[in-house]
Length: 181
Image: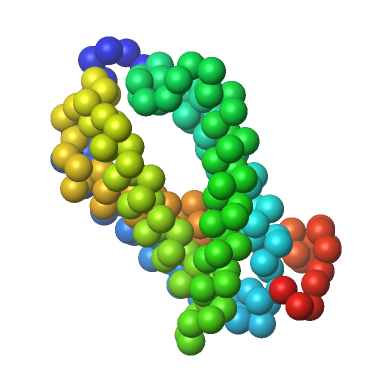
């Protein structure tokens, strides 16, 4: 990434619209294909899938591709290779909490799970903004509002992928199936 590349508010608003166009059919697909009964059985599969997804995201994007442009400005150098593990475990625990909340709410638990996953981005991105995320050169032309709103739809995509991975692992017979959740 060169020093002239900038992420602007306009770019983030456009990306938000595109993410909405991607997320809507994914959420509908999950609602139609993942029954409440199946979702209740996926607790540990969801946790494991979340660990894998967030460790991969932080390993590939934060610790490699965007380290110099973004994350190296926010985190100490020694944390670079610990972040994927730490965020994987953290979000795996969050997935268990979201699974519990989702099965407790009437309606479509897998949809609630994905929507909660989208909303959790507000916490992390707000902390990042507070710590100077929008002062790094790559993001200096983006507004907090555009970054926060885009983050919600970005994370809905991740959490839809997590549900998909968990279902695939379940169907493949990977992991322990526990009836008690």
